[in-house]
Length: 320
Image 1 (cartoon, helix red, strand yellow):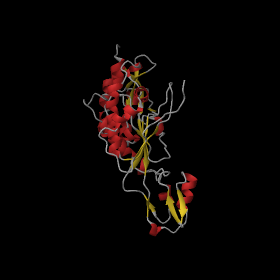
Image 2 (cartoon, helix red, strand yellow):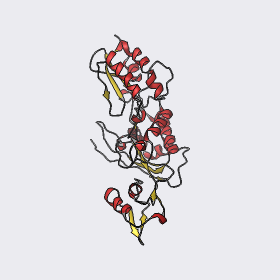
Image 3 (cartoon, one colour):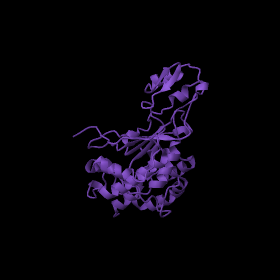
Image 4 (cartoon, one colour):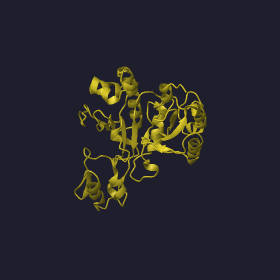
């Protein structure tokens, strides 16, 4: 069967090693879905695939062993999953209209984890609605706290939850629990001054250990949600590196705006002749300079008053 592999990949199918067979990629923004959709995925795998499903590194599903001639049937069967995950789709019944922007991954978040500072799934789904479909090669990941279970510093955009600890002096009994746990499990941002805990604002990473371990609830989480935004971590053959901090104490609206601005920046500067027709964002920034990227990224962004912006970002990592 003659097949247009470029069109196949854009439709979220994979070119595989076995002639005439492909694999369907199923998006699960935030990594959370209802079990009823797993029944649909199982049916596709059993009836049109090889009876197996691969859980991808980005928290989606990949169904291998699908014949080229069955792709349209698979797309139709996937429609309830696409609808249920509320994924933007120009043509219902045609499957996914793009695969460039990868599935947005997230840790379990504060729906389950006591350490998480926010609902990672909800924010991932919000970003999904804003950016997908798009053919540009973006990788976005979210983690609920500085424990970074999702390894967000290995992505183009890493979104790490923070909380601004609120201290009520009248509830404090000077037990030092917050100070001890901040020293043992975090960055030692608290110390005792005049028998009361004092927070070093520059050192605090917003992890919430003081909140979790205060027996009197003298420390509480801030009503406002804050984040640490890291940029342009990457794996791969050429110059793998960890993402670096761009902005601390940033809000959700600003993060979404910066990501959308980055799509515009990439459209402007991407090398269309790059292998596979894609170029990682970090390489583009290396080429244009960080100052040019920052001007695009912050266009129209209204940051919170407490936001801390790194004026220049330098990346380390392996060099070949």
